[in-house]
Length: 351
Image 1 (cartoon, rainbow, N blue to C red):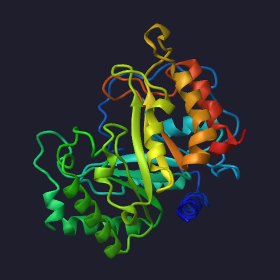
Image 2 (image 1 turned 90 degrees about the vertical axis):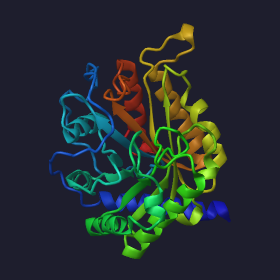
Image 3 (image 1 turned 30 degrees about the vertical axis):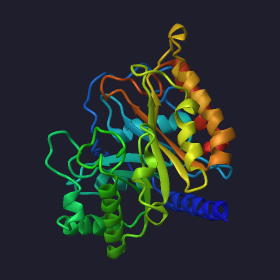
Image 4 (image 1 turned 30 degrees about the horizontal axis):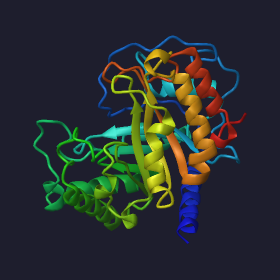
C-alpha cells in the first residue's frame, strides 16, 4: 500500500512539472540568484559539443514521454548572466532543464524576477529558503519561528508564493544535520517544530501549489532525528559532493546508503551534487569527473530510479564556490558524459 501511495504522489509531481512547462514562452531575461557562493575561478574551456557553440535549432521545452527522472541545475558561470548560461547548456543538450535552483536567506523576499524567467522558459523553480541564523556569528535562531515572532513575515512570504501562481519546490532549512548553519542545526526537536509551523502557516495562507522538500546533507547519517513527518513533506531530498579534498566517492558510494534508507517513504531527489575530480588521479584512488557522471547515469537509470524512487537529480554547475570547479565541462570527457545523460529519454532527453 505504501508503494502505491508513493507512486501516486510521484505521478502528481511529474504532472505538476509538465503543467508548468505547458505554454512556456521563449522570452529572455536576467535571473537574480541569491546564492551563497562568492565569485572566483573563471569558467573552463569549451570542449567539442560545448554550450558555447552555435547549436542548430532550439531545445524542446517539453519532457520526453519516456522520462522517469527530471534534470535540474544551479548554474553560475564566470562572466555570464544566469539565463544566458543556462540557455547555452540547454542548447547543447537539445532540451530544457526541468528544474532550476535559487537560494534565499531567511529575510530575503521571494520570489523575484528570476523565478518568473524560469517559468517562462519551462523550468520549475526549486527555491531554497535558509532558516534564521544561517551564517556563523548571526543572531537568528529557531526561537523566532517557534515563538510566533516571525508569523507575519512567514505569512507574507506564503502570500507571495500564492500570488506567484505557479508550482514551485520549496526546500526549507536544508542540510540541518550538518554544523555549518548554526541558527537551525543541532536541535532536532526545535527544527521539527519550526518546519511544521512554517508548513502550517503556508497552508493557512492558501499557498498550496508548493511541493515541500526536506533535504539533509548526505552526512552525517543522523537524518531521521530531523524528519518532520510524512504529513509535512512531499519530497525527500539530499545534497552530496564528491570533493577530492575530503576523499573521492563515486555517485553510488555517496548516495546509496541514503537512498536505500528512505526508499518507499516519499519520492526522492538529489538536490545538489557534483564532483571536482577533473581528469582524476588513479594512483590516489580518484576517478575522473566523466567516470563520476557515467556512473551516476547508469546507477540512476538502472537502480535508483526504478528501485528507490528517485524522481530528479540537479547538478551544481559552477566554479564559484570555495575554489572548487564543479562545472559540467571541467574536462571534455565530463561534458560528453553529461550530454549522454541529458539526451537519454529516461532523463527527458530526445536521443
